[in-house]
Length: 322
Image (cartoon, rainbow, N blue to C red; front, top):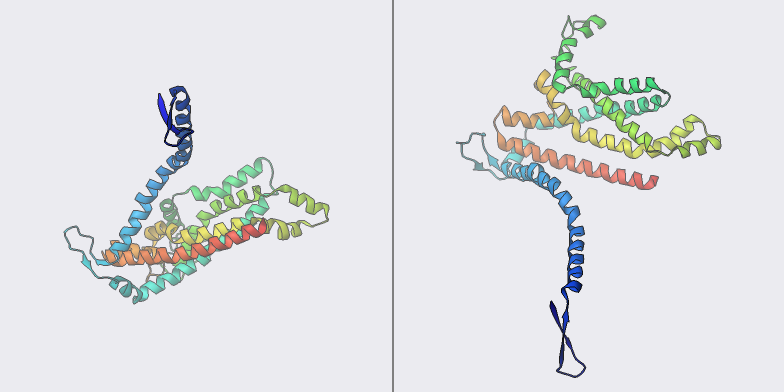
């Protein structure tokens, strides 16, 4: 039983009204239900937020903190605070700037494999029908399923100087992997070969999301297939292509790491050492945790700016298409 006091008609008088539990309980249940509906989305998000904090944000904060210390990774060695000394030392190293240049070359070399060729292959696959299309899709996507370390072992055998399949076909005796003039191109080629299937799959998904009525209306108006691709398909596919550019920029240095570590170890003469492999080399070869953390923080900041610009461009393109 609930008691509610309310003012009476005359000043100073109060009327006490008793509200039965049968009336108050539905009101409380309604409030609980509203609170539950408000909390349910956050309960679904909680596991993902916890994982983000534990595996992304906490290590990032620790990396920023570690970049201000000098430490050789030994638990018994003291961590000496150096402020911004690691950043200054890193910016003075020619190897750092050389690795940034190689990273730019890597990304530029990967774009044909992740944007241009997938677009051409996906457009060509629209002419394949029936069971042949399934075989065609499987054949294109198969390299993406190969483990990078296994791919590195196979390609080292194929590129073995003199007795390798490539040299036998080309009738040469070139050491493709350990030649400074070709080692980086080999890494780009193998990585692009592996990522081609994934990129084609993304383009297929983008093509599937385009309403076929646009093409039909254009054909009724007398547009040729080339004009339809140029003025309808490509503009509507531009957000997908920008997504592929974004993933290429952000993931190429990371995805090449297994190949570089398995095939060249950053050589010869650091010809395949990009910024991602350099920070790993500073940490686990030179045992300079502070310098490696500083390189990681600068890598995160630089790629974060690039990703922000590409996302902004993608949103503008998507809005324009709508």
